[in-house]
Length: 367
Image (cartoon, rainbow, N blue to C red):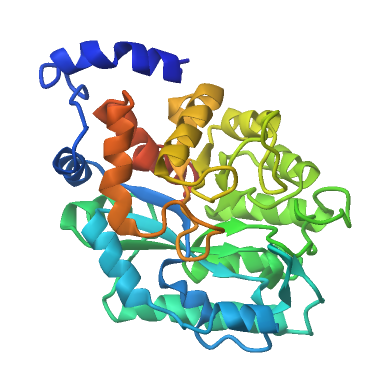
């Protein structure tokens, strides 16, 4: 398994043969990064571009109302994606938006849903995402071929995701409905422990994945929806992995280390379990223990060292991240050139920015 040390040790030698061997081109400038982006699809596994989830939202806590006071900005976000060369992203609805409140720096679920409230919120948010497609702002991604085609066309692709399985209300039959709606990725648990399992950031309610959660994971496998274990408690996440017979992802997280612990990080064992399914871990540019893009690059290499280059992707949580060190898609070429300056060659950069996630989508989809 290649590690960061191997990449850095071979960096100088690989520059001398650049252009003579496939995938061995140095990528150290913005121009080189943009040329790479023109050749390879890129895919952000978790984002909220333009915060479309706030459009038409009702019954929110004062803290969430304050957060969304600027309103959505989808056109600006998509223009940033195009300018930065990001081919596509999972555009996520936020299923538990109505029950969230702020506790210090943390988001927490402060109440339970009213009857029908979660379903209504899902419908409102889905309509906003559908409108982006209908108005030609983005092109819909339903399968891996769509993503490849959209990259070649130069358009911006949107794959629909839902952060939180609250809208399912514990019913596996609603997974097929979500797939019919165009949803291709679900994070079963967000900040609200729901009928499927427990969140990682609160005391457990169920002690792991529930029977309803297990049924929903199997339904996601059957229909071709990616299972994203982000935000789930470790017991719940391991339950999802055990229930799934297809690759799962952790779209936006980092690993716990002896020097830095966070309620939102995952254990090395859980990261390895995710990748043992054939899945990926999305490097997350949250400002927890880092303050700049170089810190984010360090995080990418730490993941590479732990799980291997074939299992690392990017999940920016764009436009809803916590103290982000990468907060605009126009910075994407800078991210790529920094990877190149640290020794990564084109073939491996292309894996991290898109190919690994695209592979998972291809393996999960049901055609």
